[in-house]
Image (spheres, rainbow, N blue to C red):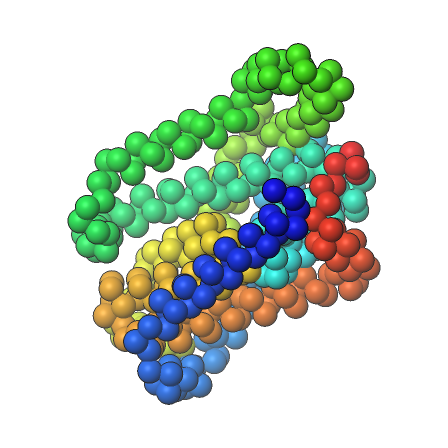
Length: 344
């Protein structure tokens, strides 16, 4: 399948997911009531979390610097924060595009290997998944009855657990150097020495991005920073509860963590720009099923929360693209979908 066909297929799938998830989110919703909840919300509690959202991106940049420390000791925090902001902005326009643009922009600014920098993004995502799983375990203990009630009776939790374990083992092997070298030696080298040398060179640079694994003294710092990032993600959700008077339903910070888990899953699995549609649908389900919130009020909360995040990320990323004069690099890279291996 050539590039154009792949791109058409990808865009078709993305559009289909957006349309279906928006349909599910808006199904049975009275639009007049929905609009009433949106315009009557207390916008003091909607604006107040914005500095916290910016701070969460800053802490993510600080954690990224920690991950990079073994291979690039003096990373500029400004360059890290601007790259994070640009990555979020691109993600809101091109699904997953920011995950590649972010390390590409940073590697250009700091003149370091893209492969190694990109590997740190993968490690970062693994840390996010691990933190989400810990949050899920925490919330599952508190809300196990409600969570199980949401799942179809045909779903076997034990089988899901086995699948998660198998997935984690597969991920470990995928980045286990002896395993990769074995595969390269057996499957690539016998057929093409040139291709083997090229892939082996890229993998060696890529592996440098995981250098922090050999630095146990930084584990505690990484754990603290990871938990802090997700707590800072939870806090704006909690503050926005007051914009819609959810506190009268007994909802507290722990409930914000539960919503964060749902939204985190939507952003992780949804191949849509900024998780449009999927986020709204998942948050609506949680609020309606767990707390008895009306569909209109739940969707109003999801829409406002998502809208504030979306616009903030576009503004921040756009600001750094203009100030750092990165617009041409980002635009050319995003449009061409070119693999930036040339920048090694």
